[in-house]
Length: 211
Image (cartoon, rainbow, N blue to C red):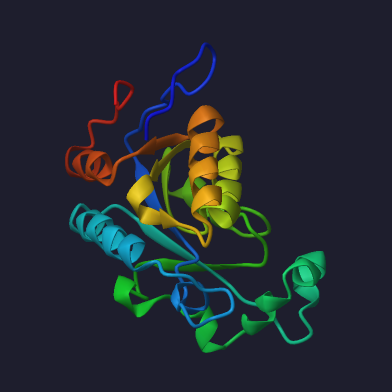
């Protein structure tokens, strides 16, 4: 991603020494093209698998998020009214399951259920990351303009360095995807290549300020 570094914007924050991979909403309801909430995320799933394979080898923690609602959907409040298709995400439904292509290890890779866009809103993620002394949140998943961007902003506001490998995030709208990545790089986190993050996880040298 080429973004001109104007004065005061789009500087790189770098990466720390204790990262986590946060896989946001790569669940069947979003990755199945036949779903009313779905889109083609095959390439993003493949790229994310590359990252997760290295993370598992290097013992970097991985956290997944999903969205689900109890019957009545009261937890969704006005979000459900704005996006009625969210009603397919009924607790226990197949749509709420993590895409099996990601091969989540249920014993070691935490699943956090959320109700709104940000993975931090109304969940215990911040406490989990604090307990594990995490300093860097690498965010992958979907959708770039919705849950990814919201999670990026909240991660920054909770005091974490934020990294988004651009091949590992996707959206139903290419224009919204591109605009959101630009906005993230300008103000909230570092949008970098998958290869950059893979090298970082392998060596954990931390500083990507010149990338």
